[in-house]
Image (cartoon, rainbow, N blue to C red; front, side, top):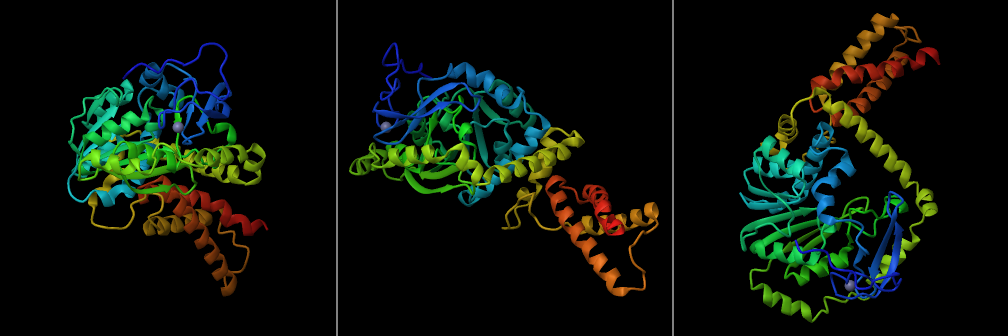
Length: 435
Ligand SMILES: [Zn+2]
């Protein structure tokens, strides 16, 4: 990786000028769209008035040292992934695979840039693809090699020895925003693709309003994209956009680009006509969205409540799921079993694969039994009252169904869902007794 660009100016920073030129259009005419990171530290974020690309200016840290060691520690408090991180990353890997499985018709040669703890690479490898990974963090890269037998090159994508015309598919999930020169990274990856090959890029969207405004910017993200700036940057790298979509909460932008079968130079010529390095209106759009996303508007939107509930639920699910203490590989093997089966076209999602009938039935019987044994069947009505008994049983069944469905997300094994579902059901079963 080349050293970071030297600031253009010394001394006090001009509010309207960037110290680092725009990586998309080369301009330095900017507006400031952020002044603090999510940690509360000073962090100036600027947006280019010509194209709308946004970046941290000046750079908040020594990029190399930060990503090699500090990044994972800052974020996750560990050099190697803990069991809950493996579980979480395994779910993310399944979700990513769901989104790109349509691109994986037959065995592919795949490069996963920013392979992290190796969960996504391992999933693709176990599905029969020939996968290489690139990961700068020493602990995570070594873990993925030792635990999953992956081929991972440890270092930055800028430095990685990439063969030209080598890959059918390259994925770069949540990495581009961390790089010092995203445009040159896209160019390198475009050259490493075979003609017709695909590049999948996912980045946080600068237009996202699902997070608190104070969490929009932080030191780890050097660049911020929206659809326009990402697509333009990829076009400059000679890629053609196949699709772009936002995640349901608007937080992430996923784009699929194709290296044209014809020469890349020809494709570049074509985009020149479209003035790829100026994106009229894009700066105004981004500055408007970021400016309008205030703390008051955020709380009035009630999004924080939904987000907190989802986070809390995920945390509890993770804590419960990893209590068995199995190794990362065994855990992922269990989580990926359905994907490997490959017999169904149904989405594979451990959290929403429907009822686990045996768990529901088991929980129901156990709950009734415990109810009877511990509380002597304290039903609030006479057993000969058929209508009341029927209503009560229906209500109990509904409770068990809901709890079993929640438990399904936490415990892949139906047998392990039974006891907690039954125990959670008991207090609810007894409510009518005391009402
Ligand atoms: Zn620009």
